[in-house]
Length: 454
Image (cartoon, rainbow, N blue to C red):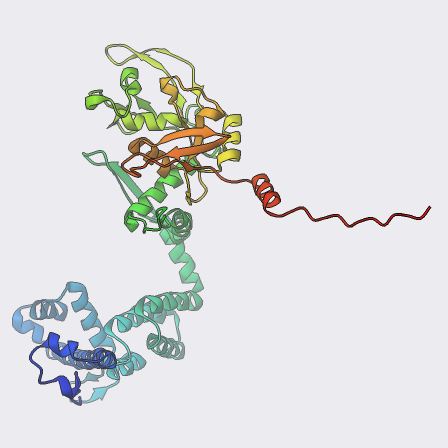
């Protein structure tokens, strides 16, 4: 291997690595990065040839290791996965030397050549080796050589992740029956587990077949899109938090659907039991000394504050309990937002009336401005549509809402806006657009009529 200059000669004698880089121009920095990468790839190619020879000689036995992978892991202090990859690539993508000193070509000659020239990395080679292990049993010798050469060629252009996608598509092309059976196997081994932790959080673990996984991804991604704040700042939520919020929105859409099966004649619902006096206490009540409610589905407690939020757009079923918790009497259900009210709210507010809300369409909540629990009526003048995110914000941050000229007005708390400047909400409709256009554009003057002669 020819020696390579890693930094420009004019900077070699400078006192330290950081000062050396500072003295480099932009072009020199790029050159250093490219040259060091080439040097590392050349060094890796040499190491792979050495690993192949070490395995031929059985050097791992000198350290009482079980195999070359373990020997490498201990000697180089690298991860088990990295040790396996290097050993596997050394076996399949480097020339072999027999006991008589004869050199034989590599099992994957195109991949070996690409490694030798520094065109691909160990990660690329591992993708090719895994792909060939899947397609080799159903290929002829010529097909196998053609497939390996094609993948090695594409590896010089694509990163390992994209190369793996191409390799999977190649497998589907060459072995359609096997791919079909693999999909059937995925369906057979599908699983989803869930359970509550001691702090009340829900843990979900799933392995989904590719069809179900695609449905999940297609549904979740639009709901998990970042939502910048009104002032243009980035969404403060992490990707994981956005995914969790999107999953919550998916559940809202599912629960609001009429297609879900009914249990005991009832639509799927979230059942909460709580003392009515505790439910009536306001968010700002001093001390918040009320007892929590209980989510009957999971047995987990829930605060009265969140129970009030959930009660905004829910069916309230009063149940009189005895001292031992046994129901004594059941009242009738009172829907706080009947269908005709919801239809009118959706027409006025769309899916969320909060100013500048860009939440994707889903199942919104019909929020009572004056809580129904506190005697607020179920009328258009006392209700507003909110998405789940802004419904939670309204309750937790104590926004004030009024209805003026049939349009919601949102007054932020002082913690959000010290001036508490009112913000118009809702959505403009086509009739409002027409009115604005008529006000802005003067009516065309009618052409004068020519009087007719008598």
